[in-house]
Amino acid sequence: MVVAQYNIGVEATIEVIGGKWKPVILCHLKHGKLRTSELKKAIPQITQKMLTQQLRELEKDGIINRIVYEQVPPKVEYEISEYGRSLNELLENLCKWGEFHIKKRTEDGEDIRLDAAEFINLP
Image (tube, rainbow, N blue to C red; front, side, top):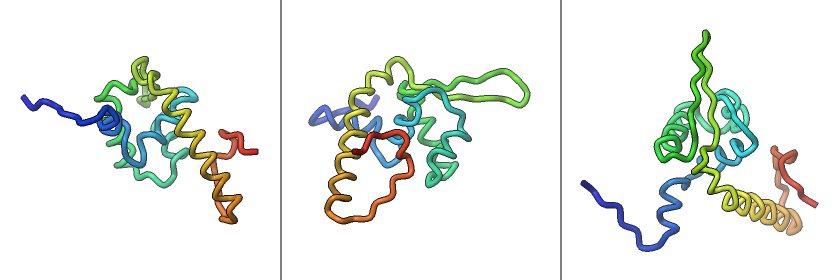
């Protein structure tokens, strides 16, 4: 059996939610249950293959729940699990810092487009 070994706690965090897409997926799921197609629409740059892979990994780590409705056609939704909700404060801080960073870059004269403007409170 392989034993996980970390030098600092943040390594364990990054192992679970690191990468380009997992935090984005989790921020969308913070607002409630979503189907795969709704997540794909919310994150148009992600490929279907990558979305499926990231959802599987988050489910395996217990961060999200996959809810299957026994109906025709089949319906599957994803939600943040009770355990995953322990990441809420961290995700909020990541979002707030990103908004702060975007504001700073805009003030420095950069032209930045933020498609999800309805989710944030930029002054």
